[in-house]
Image (cartoon, rainbow, N blue to C red; front, top):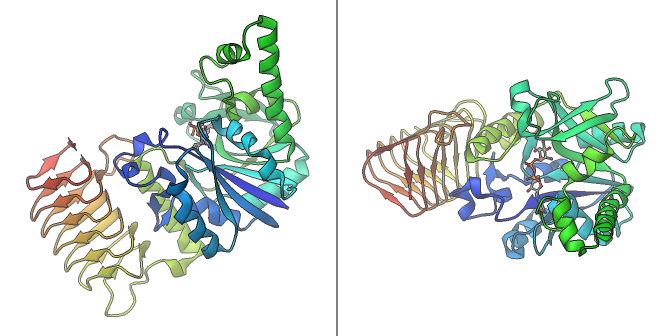
Length: 409
Ligand code: GDD
């Protein structure tokens, strides 16, 4: 058997996602018409003999309750949310729920960050992991050398694929191979985490100070019981024939900002083109709008036949799109109304917002720039003939004049 654990973090971690994360937890923000976290969850259902999927985080239980029960029914796999009372780090969180995770007696434990976007080649990783015979296998990808320092950089043996060296977000260049935040472990991972706690206790005893003080010293003021998978586990265990790597040649991105969520929505839409084309709008038939490229339209959305949609557009439930509307590379969330002849390009339009006739909501499309896309929070009203360029608008604002490069509080 196998179990999968997805670490989702908590409300203090999604701050770069404001204003969208003011309404829902970051892992539930829709990409390509499905909550961010549903993409890894769907991938987990492909794991042979999967018993459970656990989401571990420090969000309130109620933030995930509804989603967890609906996704369990929809995908026919038990998904459970486990709440930490505070952040314990990516490995500490896992360790806290050891007994529960081991209840099904799994031979393999998949661990996934919630904020990565890829095709999650989990079954292939498992095959390689069994062949290597180590404690863990890490998904890695080659990135441009100047981008690598935002991630865990690593060196692997080109023949055996053993992880030889690991440094988290190094200041000087180590390698252009990086940690993708997707792992498969044997249950020995729990002993490895336990060893960290033991080592920290020993330091405490040696220094004859309280264990809490020592741990805080050892971890440079991080809480005593905070264990990070990367720095605290991968770094010290590299080169000990315990950890191996699986390199993906497919797409991979990290989703830390709304700009990146727009890019990842588009990547998932194009993945649907090959994996599940029936999800995408076909544009066939005279009663349908003109569809260009990969577009998702929720069945409850009403799109006028004279609208032109795509490429890379996702339209959520109960959205209304009027005559002559043009949508390119955007995410339109539940209940939005877009009136006649409005244009939305490189933008995320928040729940229940309204865009007036002949208005324009647009970003330049630089996913990494702070104002590279335009984001409207929940229930924003853009009045008729108003132009909003490269701006972020907080919830419930009413815009009656045009704005550019602005953050509207
Ligand atoms: N439950 C829980 N508790 N989850 C947590 C906690 C915690 O205390 N802290 C972080 N997480 C979750 C986050 O939600 C995210 O999904 C994942 O753990 C990793 O977050 P960070 O620890 O903030 O690291 P990072 O995202 O900056 O970098 C990690 O992932 C990169 C790949 O995306 C590192 O492992 C990098 O090496 C790696 O390249």
